[in-house]
Length: 526
Image (cartoon, rainbow, N blue to C red; front, side, top):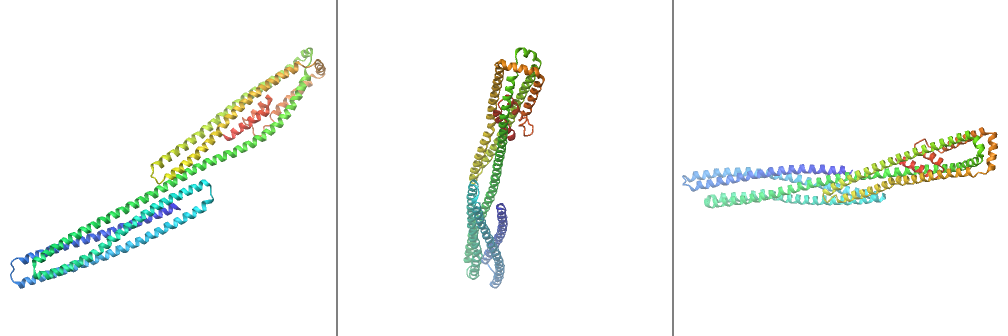
């Protein structure tokens, strides 16, 4: 809207400039015509001087001289009438030029009224934008201040233009009065010449010389007025060019401001999206933690039952020799489970390292983006420093937007540094899980060694009756435990969910639930 109005102003100024050039051409044509008239008048004065010289010579018959003088007077009167007609024509041309000048003034008043309407419209827009954000309000206030400065410059240029136009009007009025003065002087001088030619030729010659001097003086005054008029026209042209340059700079600064504001809005939108994703990840993590807590209680209950069965499953040394084969099978099964736990722990560690690498890559991408934005802001700042004193407030806006972007970059850096803390906590949890697993194995061996002989005898009797059933029960329980390890896999199978199984097999699922939730957070953020 504002750009269209500025374009309208520019087109109006161009039209006014064209009219001004046309008036200048007409004025120059009138000046050239007046110059030709003056030259012709000087030529006539020269002829008069020649006539006076001829009168001084020895003359023949006075009657013939009188006739000759009469003929010359008739010629002079005819030429004087021609000059008078030309002067009337020039006067009409000047009147037409003055009417055009008045029309130009009316158009200038129209432009000023349009400018006032635009100022009122800007005030209305500023009143409507009072309910917006504080930052937007500050930007609007700065924009209005800048517009007032531009308007002040425009008003100053307009006043200068009006002063130059008034000076031009005065010069034209002087030029309009000059033909009348010249005509009156010509009449007076011709009357004097006619009266004095009969009496004294010497006086006529002196008056002709005086007339020539007056004409030269008038020519000098006229040349001076013409120079002043040309200087006023050149100053007016410079003012118009300066106004066009200021409007172009204002438009460029508005475009730069809109671009920086768009970049800031993009950064804020990305941050809001990341916060929404983080909230979703927290919800999923809380849900998984609840499920893992339930599973932990159930697993602890089953582990207690398994320990009780292991306590009851030991037999005497002699029966242990007889039960060598099923025990070896049980040991093989336990070795398989331990190997599987080790492989799963290694895979989970590798996956954690991959996730950390991805997170570091994401952080480097974010840092590159922030560096790119900062470099763009530095370029914009340098461009603003190279400009004139008018866009200094736009530079302050750019600094404010750069500070906002730096704050966003710090927030992104804090959010990217969070995975490092999570990695440290995960490593700590892995160490604690390994220690818990070793302690559990030591306790199992101690329990097996401390079992009383009565329990061993009872187990021996039971083993004599159903050794195969015990073996099948043990395999079923191992299968059930293995299936229970895969129960919390509610989301689709990914590389992150294997961590929960390996941690649960090591005996501390509560610690690993936190690691699982944080790895899923890192995956979603990536």
